[in-house]
Length: 115
Length: 111
Image (spheres, rainbow over the protein chains, first blue to last red):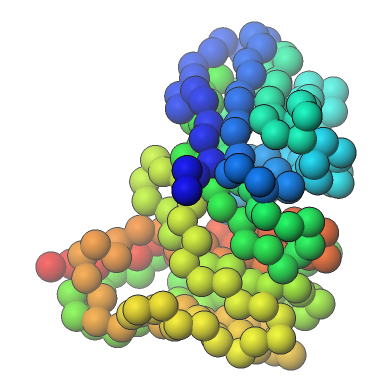
């Protein structure tokens, strides 16, 4: 079974520029998560989708971050405009079910550097 | 608000030693607890998932325990190997499936 795919793997941009990340979850997984992991810290949830609806976006900086999940499959996360403090690894994860008992599987992440 | 703490932040042991990593959480109303491994520059690999009704899970040389009432979990690694060197993260799940992570324990196993 193919894992969670993410692209690009690395991105370097100047502050105030925009950037977009893409995630393709494991086939058949209804729930998709985007996490932000700052160096030296554990991942923090940005947004959670259940099929193509948003379950939790309470920690998403909505003035600059946006995310969508088209047709309940792929998802994109966008930052516009980027700030220095957005430098982090952005991890996408998916799980089969829509309950809290389902194991989450993570992609390799996108490492963003904002200069 | 749920908070997850992992102690120690870093650990260095000689090859072959048995070791224990600790994870504590402030709110016992969790749905599951997962232990992950993260290699430098890589994503997270799930090691063990313990449902809230379970006390422990085992996979190979790994054993994870869960004590909800005291808000603690431990990851036991038997006969450590240099290939076990990585950062280990524990995370607890809320009722929506959201994972709340600790900051991780970075393990180095010396040959």
